Amino acid sequence: MFSRLFRSRSEVPAAAEAAAPVAPAASGAAAPATPPVAPLPGEEQRHSFVRREPIVNRQQRVAAYEFNLEARLASRLGGRSAVVQRSLQEALFHELALASGESGVLGQRLAFVPVSPDALDSAALARLPRQNTVLMLALPPDVEAEALPPPATLVRLRQEGFLLGMYVPPDKAALAALRPHLDYVAVDVAAFDGERLRNLAYALKTVDGHTVHLIADNVQTADEFNLCFQRGFDYFQGRAVSLKEAWAPAKGAASRMRIIQLLNLVRNEAENKELAETLKQDPLLSFRILRYINSPGIGLTTPVSSIEHALVVLGLGRFYRWLSLLLFAPQGGGFGEWLVVEHALTRGRLMELLGAGRFPPAEHDALFLCGSFSLLDRLLQQPLAEVVGQLTLPPAVKQALLQRQGPYAQLLEVAEACESLESARIESAAQAAGLEAEATNRAMIMAMAWANEVGELGGSDAL
Image 1: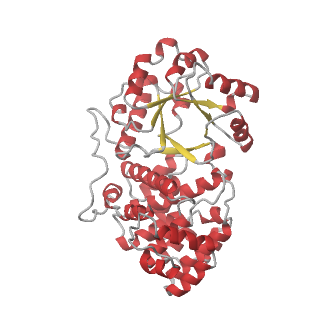
Image 2 (image 1 turned 90 degrees about the horizontal axis):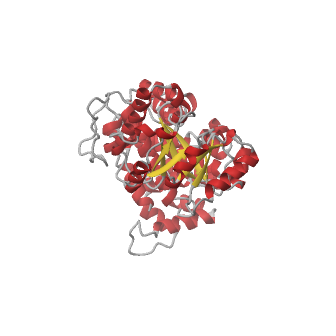
Image 3 (image 1 turned 45 degrees about the vertical axis):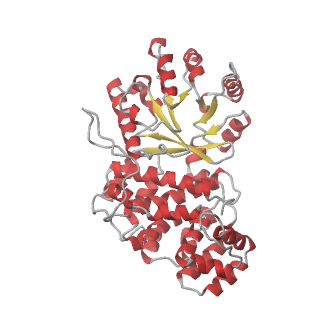
């Protein structure tokens, strides 16, 4: 389990080759997970920065991301020429195809991709991974019946493996015509009052036995989230989910402080005896390390039954990485805590990937710590300066976290900007760090997929 994740974290040259054009990749780098996607004839060579927005499910866990280039496609269809619209969409398809691995854009997690009807026959769309990719139809407000995609096109796309969805249009006739082919329907909750929202949700979910998953889109407040939850919506998206100010306080601060204590002991080269005594003060931590060391992924032939023996088998380096991941294991909070954890792991992995070609391997763990620890203030509900003051960290990590200076500062800014909904901020941060859009997009999606894998295989139940 985590041994496989640790191995995947150390294998960064393939990403570094794309993410750090300013420095040559290490020799012997592994081949990229997917072959390069060559541009079609006439395609521009300039790449665009991809934005992401989280979508959570009823279990209040991140279940998907919606990807865009600038602003949401549905909001700009009426103000752009058809040529510009199609150009923007094909650029998005191309960037996602370049950044995707063999198991899809985000592996087992859903990737929502807005698309207008006239782009469904795009050759660039055909290069997108099918697995868990949801094509979300965005119709202009004044759409006419003849402009709707033919049913045969939707049937073909589903047969090819795509999932289909649609943003609810003002024209109910358009929704009725396309609904039998849809897997997902996104409803702008700001456009409906509570009663109309209830009626719409009921009508969408109970037609002809065809199951449609409902997405509450543009959810602005916790009250709107709760209302949509009560109305039976399956997924939730908007400011109430994506803004850091809305993230709920995390749980389990006491246990995390014990982990921080252990991290400091390892950094200060404490003896195994002292580490074991500290571990034993927390029965849950003791249980978790013994369960981890005896898991099939470690591959031991003889069971380990003591904390001291477990530390010897792991070694301090591996024990430190295990603790670093354990620090971000959700401990029972709602989607706010899951988002903090997800973003922290994604930041850490993204910095590691982007810095792999410009920093020596000995600093890769420090890059990961810099990114992931940048959200400890949210996780522990303490000012970041106080949290960092309790940790023994490399000077470059402290400098980046507290002063926004030093060798890691620019990559930290890129990692933070990639969470924003502002394309200009992402582009500005990446350019300041000397990063191209293609490399940044690829590293971001790889980091998101890795963070999801950690969440699925190494959540609080698995650690």
